[in-house]
Image (tube, rainbow, N blue to C red; front, side, top):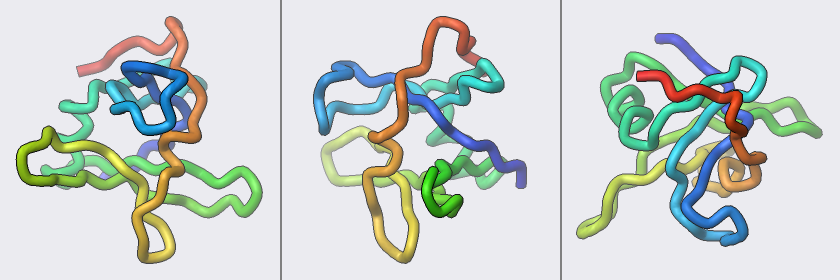
Length: 100
């Protein structure tokens, strides 16, 4: 399985602490994926995505959360618990092109 570091995201409302993520990406590689595409790839187990903690260097893998009546969403998982590492990432800029 291929693994990719995620260091940027796009949200519907960048200023919201809890607003839904629309894209994940990597500003160094200049790419980003839609949430739907990332969900599909993660659930197919063809690719995995992770964030890196700047202090410890540890990885937090991104998983898919499914709740009744809601669209699936992305969240990081580390140390045997779900956390908000993904929401702490910076905004993906225009240089990050959407890949399919």
